[in-house]
Amino acid sequence: MRPLLVALAMVVVSATVPSAVCRTGAAVWHDDAVDAQLALGRGVAHWVDGELEVGAFSTGDPLFDAEWLFGTYMMAAMGYGQVASGLASVDPRREEMLARMDRCLRRLGDPDVTAFDTGKWGHAALDRLDGDEGHAAYLGYYGLALALRTELGSHALEPRAEAIAAALARRLASERVIETYPGERYPVDNAAGVAAIGLLAEAKGRPRPAVVATWLQHMDEALVDPDSGLLIQSMRASGRPLDAPRGSGTTLASYFVSFIDPTRAQALHTAAERALGDTVLGFGALREYPDGHQGQGDIDSGPLIAGYSISATGFALAGAKRYGDDERFAELWATSRLFGIPRRRGRSLHFATGGPLGDAILFAMLTARPREDL
Image (cartoon, rainbow, N blue to C red; front, side, top):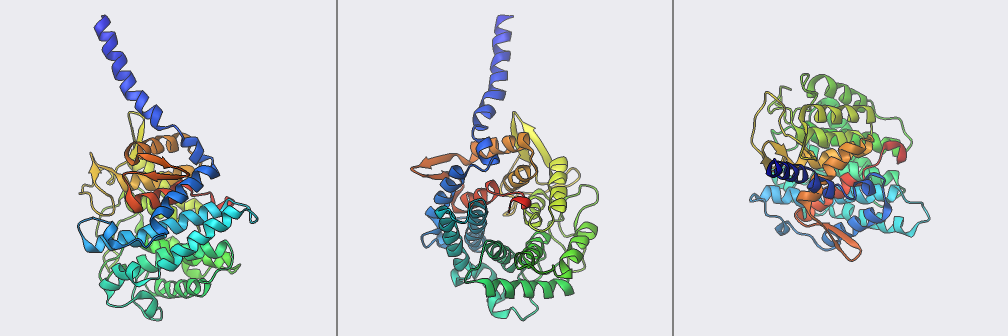
């Protein structure tokens, strides 16, 4: 009997102690502790304050390497903006965050950072804003970061923010799901563009263009899988799904939509948790595919571990934080801490295994704030 009790105790300890240790610090992020946010911002600055190049990434595909360069600057800009939004206007740290955000926004217009999109289309998106080509990801993600900056005060790139939002609004008014690349349509990228349009109008004190409400209604009716509540990952030109509803696209879209429609954003987050969420030995995770669908890991989901998605799990942090689910946030944070391996270097914080993009994404997700706080 004694060996059996010892073995049982070992199982219980192994199932609870690691997750309990990894949960340490969850409340710091959930409660928006400024010191932790600034430390992670300084860690991200290690990457973005220098001339980060595409060679810093090694996905095995030049296109994806270039996408990750763009994504690093975009997510870093969102993180700096979210931290700045929680600081008083007279706080010098707010100016530090805005200055770093402005640097990221300038870099997002540089040819080496736009190369992933330019190479696919054969022209630079910013040179053809009066055209009809989609550029949904580049213009949508960049436009959202610019709109957030506009909400925080006047800046040098406001004319670019206005031009991008106008181009997106015109294109989305004529075609509900515009192309990211020629022949490729992803609802999550369109969600970023719609959020850019709506947030900029709000920041400037203007009524939202009608296309915002129209697109969100279209999302409800045609882009969300009725069985799971998840966002379809990619679409055909005809409007029919090309890929399954998936966790990575749904959780990232929830983050984007939260800037203009917290209720719909929470619905996406809740659907992802209901259809995909699990807790394994105290660690929170989301699967990439719901029941009835199968697929491989890819650049969107990251490597799948027993079906669990690195991307969906990381993006879900923002939803759990924004909607006050303390327990779920702690579970997801435990997983991020276990696999990300946070490391302090002086006044900076890095996630050792994530590289530039991993640091930047977690910066944006961990500093996400409820819209009423912005």
